[in-house]
Amino acid sequence: MVFDKTREETTCVVCGDQAFGRHYGASACNGCKGFFRRSVWNKRSYKCRFSGSCVIEKERRNACRSCRLKKCFAAGLNPRAVQSERDCNTKRDCSVKRSNGTPNGDLPSCSSSTGIQTTCIKDETDELSCFNTRLDQSAAILVELEHRIMTRVDNAAEESPSAHTRLSVPFSTAFKNPALITRRTPLIITGEQIAKLEDAMQDYRRVFVLYTDWLREFSEFAIFSSEDQ
Image (tube, rainbow, N blue to C red; front, side, top):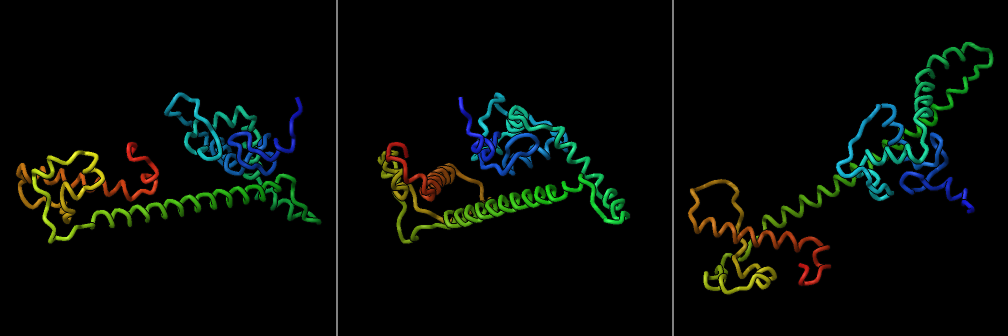
């Protein structure tokens, strides 16, 4: 069997993402490299919510930290290399001071990890910043969507369907035409009076319309067939 060494060196052995060289004894992407380093440095212990056999791949490598760390070990990432790097970085300052006292001012070899640490910190910061940006964008979309749906009302001049009409409408028809159940009235979430039976039934009808409005705001819902909807 012939192995493609070039592919091995450029593919993360943990998640399959693009790797830029070997880290801690194996080819790993910046994400898995940073995750493994933080886990070892902080002596993290994770617990899988499932059977301990989650699939770790690029698109969902953050879904289960327990299985991801387990795969890091299985793929050959060496925790001793992480610890050595940390020890070297801890001693860097005093080593630099000693080297400044020499005629040529040469730095000890262990100070070369400074660049690695700087790159790691930058990678983690960029990754976190990108994640927070996507999170803020998603939250803004949902807030705008909620406001649009919750404030939607029908023309007050239109009459609400009669009880006879509501009872004779099949569910599938009502689902596609919620106005046959009730008009969209302003939503009042504060308690203003003791609800009677008719009030409770009207709330149920209004929630039904609200539910269908929410579904139709998602573009993915339109992809389904009528039966699936």
